[in-house]
Image 1: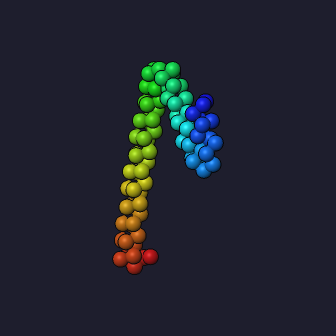
Image 2 (image 1 turned 120 degrees about the horizontal axis):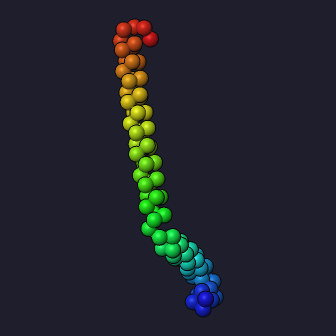
Image 3 (image 1 turned 180 degrees about the vertical axis):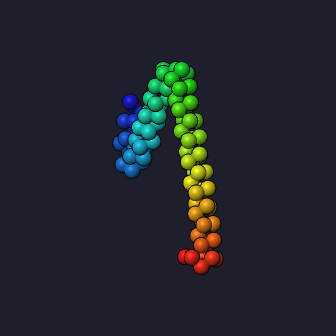
Amino acid sequence: CWIDCAFGVIPFAGDLFDFGFKANEKNLAIFDDQLQRGLQDRATEDKQFVCCMILGLLLLCLGSVAAVIGIIVLIVLYLSGNL
């Protein structure tokens, strides 16, 4: 591309421009790919993402409840002198 060549000849600024320009080209390619895949595939991916998030939140809640129960048990054992 002529824009990349024009800014590429400038020593330090050309490197910065190349970094931003190439990242932008990659983002545009990813965006075009998503548009080509259509909404059908995205809906399936969205459902999978939501299911994974719900599962993660449930595991986080269960872990928190288990930690609280464990702490309560330790406190009761400590106060009763059995620890």
